[in-house]
Amino acid sequence: MPDPIAVNSMFGRIARRYDLANLLLCGGIDTWWRRQLVAAVREKSPRDVLDLATGSGDVAFALSRRLEKSTAIVGMDFCQPMLDEAEIKKLAAGKTKFENVTFRQGDGLALPLPDATFDAVTISFGLRNLADRAKGLREMRRVLRPGGRLYVLEFSQPHAWFRPLYYFYLRRILPFIAGIVTGDRAAYVYLNRTIGDFPDRPALAAEIKAVGFSNVSARAMTVGIVALHEAVK
Image (cartoon, rainbow, N blue to C red; front, side):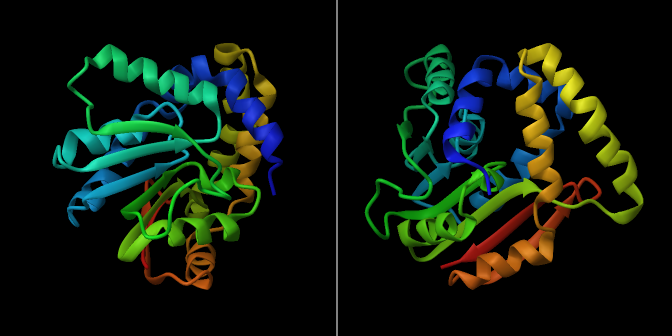
């Protein structure tokens, strides 16, 4: 499992260039993935949402745009430089645009939050960076109210026919491009390794169910390279 100190340091180093690197590496398709997540959350009209591993805040802001303005959204991350980037975006958008979004520093393995606080918890491309996935999932379940929903948007294992091309891109092309953009090729070598080692959809669904969630479902997107898992407390 990832070393949390190393992960924190890595994201701190690439924070300022993180969004640009994502745009170049994903070709903008990550915006569509986020829209699918937000649409799923919107169906349930939550009163409050925790966006865990919020990074530079893109999911929190997307939720704010599509949910009722009365919905309180907390973006939480353990890497302060990433949260600083989120705050810069919020300030640039103007005082009133994202009034319902607040950002807080917090560790996903020991959330500084009371039990049963949120109707929904989202985590996008952050679960694979947790040092202990089961512990993190239990924390997410703890802060959900009964009947609350978990949404995990994460890289997955692609359909078999696409895997050779996909892994060639991950191992050869992605670190090269990211190294040029961020100046930190090693960070993206780590990230492509975590993607390659991550469970497929059935295995991750089993992990989510094992910590006490029910009604676990998984939806593959973009030939299976990404999946949206949903579950109920």
